[in-house]
Image 1: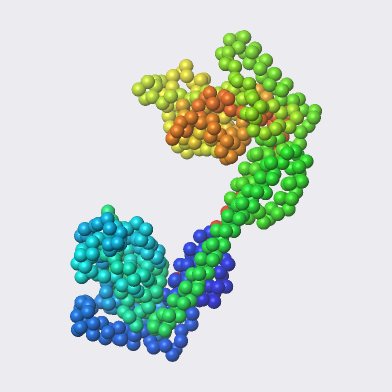
Image 2 (image 1 turned 90 degrees about the vertical axis):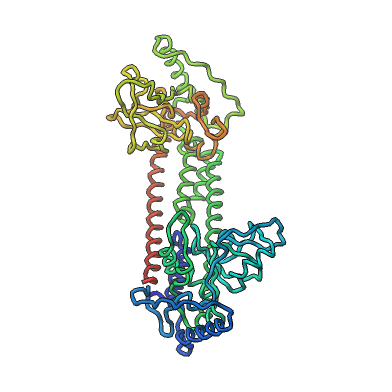
Length: 570
């Protein structure tokens, strides 16, 4: 059984697990309402005596005409009791410890625009533990007087949402503000000198009571907790003195949770900023020599920096930036420069044009200096995609016009970053004369034209026949161009937001063919392309392994935290 001591002993585990502070808050309330948060005092007057005093007080109020006579509550059977109670506690129902259980106006009161009139409080004004009057309608004073004959909330009342998706959300009314309620808000008025409002409120917030509330909610277009169900909610009632100690202790622990939550958010923000700053020093390194020094300084702190999957994601993005800038692997002066490779590609295209095998391509605009986002290593060249690859859109989907046999095809939803999802494949009608035009072959790069423009993956299924539709570009690199390099450049620019400048459309973005042909690629020598691709794939495998181990660690921590909460509730 977990008690307050065990709670504090496991505080670090609970607080640092994913979603841990929220679970910690639930655990505190669970321990509080079960009497496990702190030891009992045998000298306290037992709750059974307290209940008799509350009953006597209510009878006097009834006799004086201050409250209406309440109906006797149903006895709580043994099988209804969710847990055992400590000595001096007893089970009761909300109606037995409150002098008022009612709700607001069932018909919409007349409203007015006078902000000095009486606020009309609805479910949206009742926030978690606090009232919010920011968005409030108003009712005239004379209308409010009539509404108050049914219910006039007072300081110390508990206001609880009883209609809608936030049913069960509640707060203690602490301000002496006159207000009119609507039906969606229930008022519970704890018996004075018998029930501390904050204790009852915390009990109602506890996981066990929230589960009971939702088990009694009538599910319809608008979920609703009827008054009779609110009045019948079960309460584990401690002696009055212990109620006070529990409230004090819960408040202390909730403030600790607030601090842990703020610390966690601050640490997360600080960690993100630190990762961003340090990895930026790598990506901005002006030379391989500078990168080596920067890498050494950052790598010495990897055990602290790479402590969560998001940090590994940031590192992987930095690896892409280093790759496309020529900083990931050393240059070899003996490599044939990219300029010579471009001349060979141009010569081969001219030969195919002369032979009538391909159409003459339209000249692409020269690359201006201001277009180049960064400097390149010796032997590299800036090129436009249209210079080094053929690009075309897929087959238009038109059931009325498309004829021929049925063939499988890819949509943009099938193309994810670095992989193609083959779980949901549709079919399209194609004529025999269209098969070669729209057939995919290993090494083809598929790029989303719309949906998520720029997202891309390489087709690598030599034994599977597949075609593609018009929402995708098929980019087929010329000899001497590693298709992976084009994919790396697109992914890096996409993650950095640099692809957006190439898109058309105000709301729905498109990456049209002409823009794709003009897209700039930093091109290394052929031999270096292979070295870059191999290094990126190697580092990505390491990142994937690290990310998996960190995720597994977080999962284990979350499971341990959940087990602690379940132990407390057992």
